[in-house]
Each structure stands twice: as structure tokens, then as C-alpha cells.
Image (cartoon, rainbow, N blue to C red; front, top):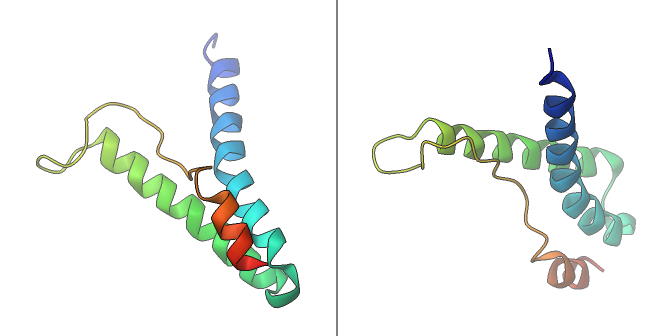
Length: 86
């Protein structure tokens, strides 16, 4: 029961770090993309992060570390992608 607040904090940190890069990139391209396209991109980012996290936690052969590591979207590509999108 003591771990519940920490688990909630971890889930919130994962959501924010995964949603912010996709939201910033899609907001730069708002005139040319619809709300449905934005939702699809965010949904795909969440699915890819979940699959990568599962692969890291439960390795397949030599792929994956076997540690509970969250793999999410990167903030590295925000500037070039927003330039391309706008």
C-alpha cells in the first residue's frame, strides 16, 4: 500500500514524457493535420513505448536488458520535426 503513491508518480512521469514530444510536433503542423491524425500519432507513440518497455523488461534472446526500464519518446528530435512540420 505504501508503494501506490510512487507507482502513480511513475505512471504520471511516463505519460508526460511520452505525450509532450508528440504534442509539440503535432501542434506545429496543426493546419495540415486533423485532430484524428494527432490522436493516431499520440496513440502510436504510446503503443511503441509500451512495446519497447516490455521488450526491455522481458528480453528476447540478446535483445533487451531484463531491467524494468521505461522506453519513451525522445525530446531530441523536437526542433527538426517542428521545423519540418511547420
